[in-house]
View 1 (cartoon, one colour):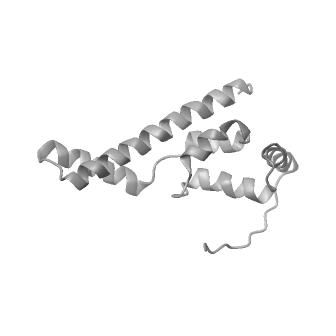
View 2 (cartoon, rainbow, N blue to C red):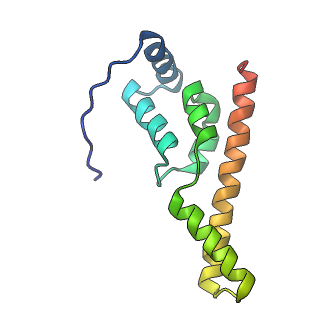
Length: 126
């Protein structure tokens, strides 16, 4: 089980109301909405992309913006660049080809989610 750390926050009333509204719409506790938002923003490695895509419309605007601005991790980006560069000079092994394909799939999935999140935000008047 993952270790958790207690945290006390003082949120502006308007922000708290938006978070609480998102929690109500998604039938989740406020704490869950905050944890999910922070995981999206800071790149939680164990995001269930399929579940996220299925529930995109229930996310708060803050969560959607976090998804839009989320970037791939330095490790993922570096490995993708390394494998791509290596593949231009020498043939990649089967394992490296599979790893490169998985990294490209992840980038594509994130880009699609960025686009869908922007569409939902646009439909909400942003």
